[in-house]
Amino acid sequence: MKSHSFARDRVIRLRRGQSIRLVCGFPLITRRITLHPGEFVVATCDASPRVIVVGCQDFNRRIRIHLLPGQQLIVRCRH
View 1 (cartoon, rainbow, N blue to C red):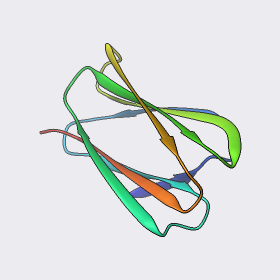
View 2 (cartoon, one colour):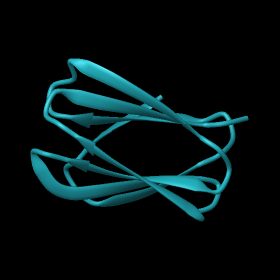
View 3 (cartoon, one colour):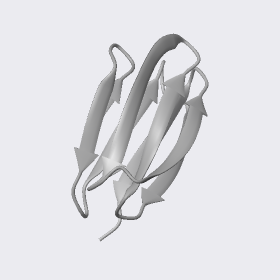
View 4 (cartoon, rainbow, N blue to C red):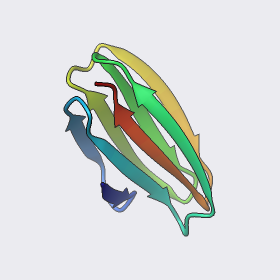
């Protein structure tokens, strides 16, 4: 599983079964989300003005998530 910080804006497209970890600061708390094909997450971090967009195959239905410093998010694309 790859790990990404909020050092720059990114758009990441996952395929079925893939997962990725988004880290906001030093990870102390872990949140998990599983996306269905067509869903995507727009994640922001309190410590950075950057945005990371992670989609499961397509980008049709948006979910917004705001991480606080010390949180990480594991995003998985459903099989």
